[in-house]
Amino acid sequence: MPENSRNLVQQEVLKELKLVLQNLEEKYRTCDPAMFKDIIHRDAIYTFTDGRFVGLDQILKAFGDTWDQIKEEVYTIKDIKWLVANQNFALCVYTFEWSGKIDKKPSSGMGNATNVLVRDDNNNWKFIHEHLSKINY
Image 1 (cartoon, rainbow, N blue to C red):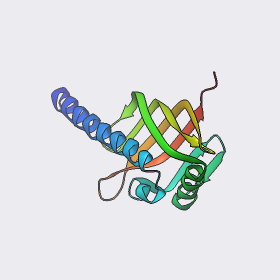
Image 2: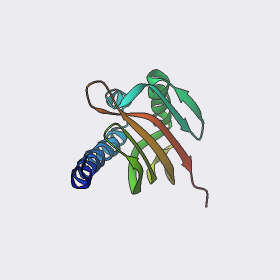
Image 3: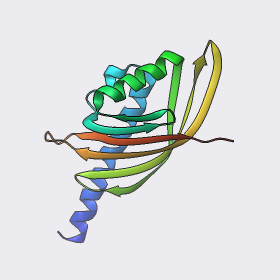
Image 4: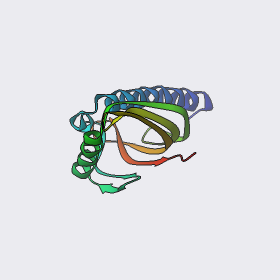
């Protein structure tokens, strides 16, 4: 593929991925695990501060358990860096911030995220791995 064509494809992929992460951020703000069924790969592995979750069902349950504790959560994605992005695979890192209420008291935090995305058989981007870790200050 000529260099010009490769650059155009890369730009298109990055536009798509920007929308995918905006969609992810919006879904996090719903605090509804069911909203994630269409964007998480069925064989995904997610790692959070409180454990490792394998498969869509475990991941959705972990989301629900979190939102049972954190009410009115607002989740923000910042400083996105795409380390790899091609037509079928993408890997990014970013910083996230969250705020909400735990036991009716304001609470907040921030952390680092790593996401790996793959295309499914219908050409849709799916999250196949996410690792969130909190930043302690």
